[in-house]
Length: 79
Image 1 (cartoon, rainbow, N blue to C red):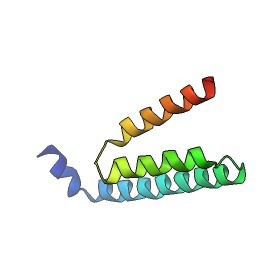
Image 2 (cartoon, helix red, strand yellow):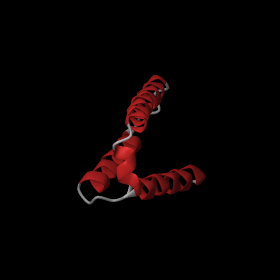
Image 3 (tube, helix red, strand yellow):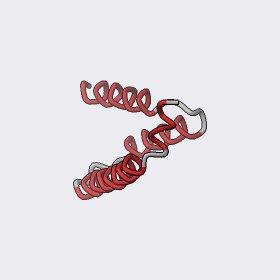
Image 4 (cartoon, rainbow, N blue to C red):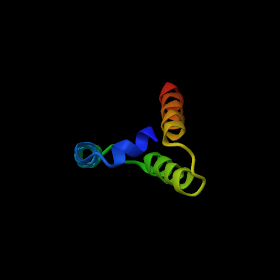
C-alpha cells in the first residue's frame, strides 16, 4: 500500500528514471575502463559467464553473486 503511493507519484517516477540512466552510465564507464586497462582475461570472462548464468537462469540475488566474486578474487590474488 505504501509503495503503491510512490508508483503514482510523478516526481518519484521521474527521479527513478533519472537514477536508471545514471546507473547505466556508471556501468558503461566501468566497462570502458576495464577494457582500456586490458584487465580482461579468461578468468574474468569465466566469472562474467558464471555470474550471468547464476543471475538469469537460477535467479540468484546479485548481492550474493557480487560477494562470491569478491571472495573468489581475494582468494586468487592471495596465491
